[in-house]
Image (tube, rainbow, N blue to C red; front, side, top):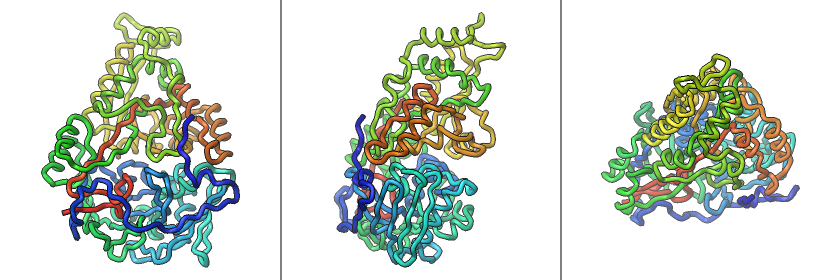
Length: 530
């Protein structure tokens, strides 16, 4: 098994890793080499509407993306070198059961309040409290974690009851809210209550979101400030779910940045725009195991994978711009690189799929449709839509599974509806097969989705009960560094509870714009050029 080496994660017990500020500037990603533009407007494309803007309460990937404009994190991690750099924290240390951060002086919030060590500790404790319902619990903040603040030293210390792999890495990615946002989590659904470079000034749901630069911001990665040349005055995130439309607007200059995939990529490439590439999960298949659902039957899950060509499915869902996925962990920089798919899921074989169903008692009638004990094999495929390629892939799967004798209902939905159906806990019996993306760079980030109670009281939206997975997780959770990369995920793919099948190499193109560092649209990384 291969892994990425993170200096902070490999630190021996008791050995402190302390990094101080690096030099200013940084290298530009996507810059066309022009002179920095002063006080310009940076327009970029959103592919999905974020809905509620509170980044610690929402489970939406769109919310997570747009929140980077208005909310800071404790440290910044370079995606190319995996090096940690200062942000809200100016130095940090890690042991197997704790991580501590010294918070900068002079950090302010959009409401004028000061963001200090106690505020950061309050964030972690808020997320850790299950009564608050934060979607970050179990992902950026481990279950059972707690934080204390020492105002005299400006230091917060996060501790876990047992050794926690990737503690520094996970906690450092939590978007930090200001005190007002913690006191009333609904207050930041339509505005920002953070310490980021930009502040929300206009919300036009399903159309655009406008952000204005904050004066006096001077704590960004690479010493970025609100006076750094090229930093925009205004940022407008525009809904552009249609890739062809986004490509046209990028070419005309209506947009400064947009992700482009599929056939439109050729004409954007011909324009010689600067770009960055970011691998993203685009095909993850989850099976609902709630009692009495057809997919609670292991034979049905096995047959569905045997009955569809995942190579073809990956080709279609990525519009020819991706590859087969080898693990659920697909977001860079990944803490671990491993293959949980090869040898763990059944091969494509339609005859074998039919035989699997026959042996499990799902018999075909004269019309070819299958049933068991008088119950028809009806499957509801629910997928995150918004792109023609995803709809085409859903139709391909529907056809393949219909050929096995199933009645297949297909429903596409936007990001907000996906979160409501999958994670609200209102009704977990609205789907049998789900194609959604859980974007994470660490294997432990998936644990809350595969263990514990179903959504009414937790995140386990598939109602998975897998003792072998839980045992593997427990073993890995007691380790740190390289050893924590143990492949517990294989226990999920072996039982066909979740199957990653496609990754897209997402290309972001820039017209007279770029990122000063990294590959994410962090507010302090945005630059405009003449």
